[in-house]
Length: 271
Image (cartoon, rainbow, N blue to C red; front, side, top):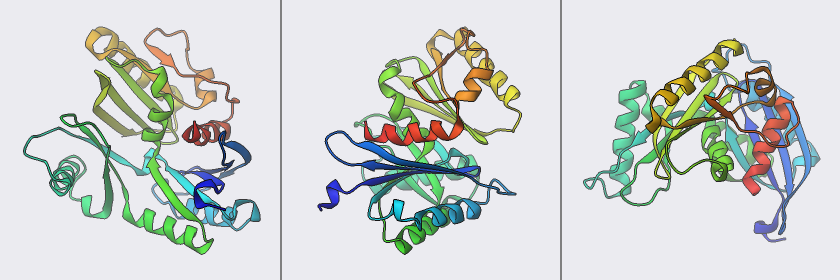
């Protein structure tokens, strides 16, 4: 069978859960298996328990003989914006500047992270995303031990944004994605992302809902900021005040379970 037509496994990996979905490739990719595993990590910054849980699942015949696309939780990702500059033409120059921006934002840690830039049209800003190199190396090791081929790896915010892009306005809007321990947001102007925000959040989801509502009120007070569109676990949308005009809660036909949310996210990578 051609590698292009092999089944693919979508994987979400985060500090609290690992989710897998096997997609049967074809003209209309179909989900033929899904599995969610809760991860018991003492320290949310430690990805070893999630890596171990993923390795145990991949040993099952159900997940063999496939290509793999991985979505990494925003808890382990960092973001920044790289402004367009006529003085930064070569890819190496842009990457060097991106590292400098990350260093200025997060401290002198950029050498410990693998950095990527969004593929944007000329004369527009790019989203800088960074994931710990050690995490990526350990994921490569786990996949290689099960003879699985990695074809894509992206942080959660980028995958979620691409999945909802058609339902978002072209200008004056925030897109915010909430997950376990993280809140990340992109601002859209003239169809392009021009700002990015990323924060670690607490387990007090009531406080986080109030944080989002504050963000919505601020946007309402500044018309140029636009509406705030929120991608969040289904149960959080149910618990929140969905009648609040400051926020637009993005909804689809997902079941009200956190694992189902992530399966839907993985399916969204296949259209």
